[in-house]
Length: 117
Image 1 (cartoon, rainbow, N blue to C red):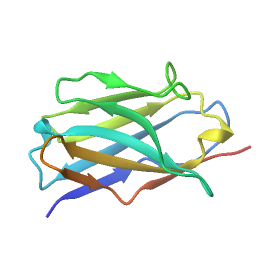
Image 2 (image 1 turned 120 degrees about the vertical axis):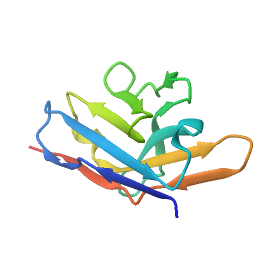
Image 3 (image 1 turned 90 degrees about the horizontal axis):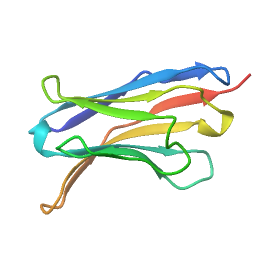
């Protein structure tokens, strides 16, 4: 079955960094667009970063220039580098895989990121 397993979350202080990883199994990884989303308490889930099969990336203004998404098709992983974290980055971060045109979309269970002094 399809599994997306996130890791790397934790509690950090403002200004510190985290790297999130998502390991995918059960899918032909390199044909899927991958992404990271987050959901803070009381808020809707929001897009953090996406990366296409060709490696093109996109970010919302809230994290553009600060977060970096990357993928390794040899290891079936997608990562999110998050330097200079802010308290407003606190959320559960979810890994997402989408196969455009086929209606296939999968989600991981999420990993908690807490930024607090």
